[in-house]
Amino acid sequence: MRHIFLTFFLTGLFFAANAQEFKARVRVDASAVRGSNKQIFKTLEKSIENFINQRRWSDKHFQDYEKIKLDIVLNIKSYNVKNNEINGELYFRSYRPVYKSDYETLLLNLIEKDFSFKYREFEKLDFNIELYDNNLTSTLAFYAYVALGHDFDSFKENAGRPFYEKAEIIQNNAEQNGIKGWEKDHKNNSKGDLIELLLDPNSNYYHKAIYTYHRWGLDQMADNVELGKRNIISAINYLQKLKDTNRRSDYLIKIFFDAKADELVQIFSAGPPVSLAFAVNKLRNLAPNYEFKWAEIQKNYQKNTYHNSFNRRMPPGQLK
Image (spheres, rainbow, N blue to C red):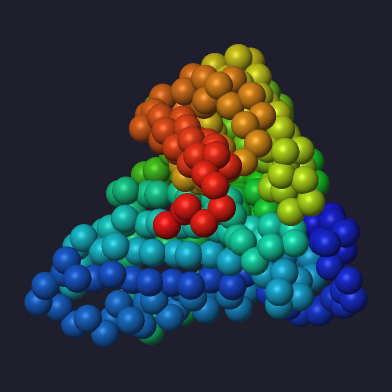
């Protein structure tokens, strides 16, 4: 249970029976749309925010400080007034607090480049997990459950599975209605592919990586930076095992590094080196598209090491 683990971090925990799970910030950018009533997009923005924040997504109880923070951005490319169809890009990000710090780590960074749905101003955003109604609410609900799954996974190994199973129900309903982007085609990194991979027993190393990286990596760094970094390398090793044992794992590995690449640069650019060359080689093998990031690690570490060594050699009062 997520909150059993939160009590390890926080004292005086009192559960609020009706507290929702998310604290979402929503932005709808319609700057690319011309010659239309822009107020509809402000209404849509508020409707999405209420849909996420005011709905109960589980039977778990969240205090306000426990709520999962989300950033949802919808960049609208086109709006057909005649049939109320909107097309754009959807960005969905979720965050997790890190023990003994005010730092929030990016847990998910999902992007849907071709996202279409129909919307009439002031219409209620309805959702029933058992029935497909429209692509907007189904997509938001799907990603909400994926975010819950990752959040719970990060506190307890495999604790997110019940939420992935709910996301699969949404995916199945949408796929049965022939909606683009929901199929399990093993080609286009669809929502169907994502949930199939998350529930695949052969993806267990991914869930181990999520848990180890956050619970035994980031959460340990306030007390022992070196231990935390070593455990983060263990999480990277789990991803290598995932790659070695699951030939379809590339999508999950991409999702991991889309969220963590910048953070890994910060973690490994300074402080105890803890097998830095080994870690960078693993990163290059797992995510070669982020080679420029991994090169930055070596550059920054060498720079910081030289600077610290130079400072130690300089007599007192000589530094400017």
